[in-house]
Length: 108
Image (cartoon, rainbow, N blue to C red; front, side, top):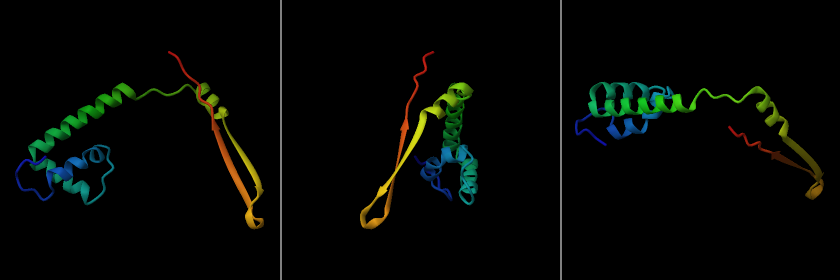
């Protein structure tokens, strides 16, 4: 997307970085360039606003659910790690690590 107006930073680059910007993950100089672009480009600012609302809706719908402590402990106990060592080629030791994860289905 491009609004057709010349900008120091192209609209497509700003839109590609929009979620990183909204998540506070952009560092300089990208952070400054995106802020500057949004101040002068109405179409990109509109996209920013839409993306911000979408992120807020997702956070409200999906966030805040934390597994109960007992369930978390049960999952940790069910994760077991087995280590076996044996002689390898040329007299060296070979270590195999096998991790087994058993899941527990939760019904509501």
